[in-house]
Length: 512
Image (cartoon, rainbow, N blue to C red; front, side, top):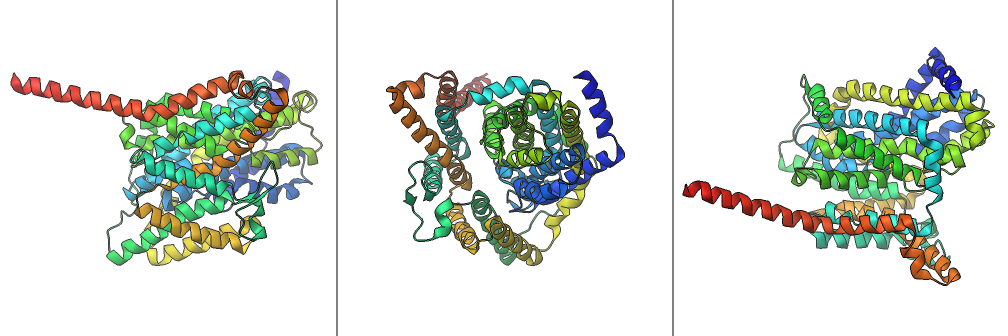
């Protein structure tokens, strides 16, 4: 292993390979920043071009694109309130409020630094613990997926802290939208209304663009008509260093988020969106100022970005050791490995150890390069918000239409995006946050598949209750579900006690 490691390190620093890594990360950032163009799409387009390349340079390039695209999603999320990739959903919650406060550069630097740190931790975990962690992925069956989805749904209480009832209603709407299409188990046709294009269900990226971006375009136009003052971007000296210094003082925030991201990535099919949402929820729970989340705090951006970039390397753990992709982009990488004649499994780390370790070490340096590209590029990228809404709004609309259409080359997706945009605009005016709706849409299918498959397995074994409540990982997830669901009430009660103590102390001081 040590010999392969030394050779791999030299391979990464070959000028051609190092340049490919930088080009890959840069291209990935651009792709991720454009709503509708996902990491999966970028990798799928790029794979045929790498067929004639040697294995190591091909994997270095693809790994760089993967890392860059996941980070790039935060750029649109922060600047125009639209997740560039599904992994950037949680970044919207605090990233865009920071932009509205005139702190777009703060948010972008925080995202770059957190993504780099999270990615580095994830890459180190991948390098050192791949075979061990792969066994954890094998332990996940339908019951574990069901409870993982339920745990994710308990985050609704956090996202809808202003009104839990409205949050639950939004989550229910999302779950309902998730049932559109062919039933994954029984094969029944549901809520397609005669449109064959809906048989495969709704596209997540279309829903994200509709619920997050279109309402913001309407708000942008409203502000222009009302001549409301908008905070323009102005580069300030020392902003980047102050943000990094602030995050350096909170190492547990980044470390905890990265560990969550890596663990969620190891679970096949979970994805960066779930990792970011879970990390965001935990950041609120452990924060001394939870009331600041959702209003524009660096901690919220950092938690989401550290997690979704750590998930990149986490998703490669089951891929390289078991041949099971942890996420959709990892599935494309599996195809690239097979095209190069590399079969996932033990021989990947022995027979092809030089190539494998070259790829793994390149991910470490890709995340370092990601920080510098984000650090120096943030001051230029943030100037996008200085463009007049008269020009910016049509450009964003054009990008939304192209992004929605490009997923399946289907015009119906564009109409659905517009419909969701109108629904999102109206529901925001009524005080409904789009987060619970999208969360319900993401987790609905996972929960349904896990529930039905677990019931079938329990029925076959003659003990359905044991299938859900006796498996070790399921028990841990059930405990986490109970804690997460009860936490908003515990937190609220604790906050009231603190306020009562302050009043008592204030009264005693006044009396003295």
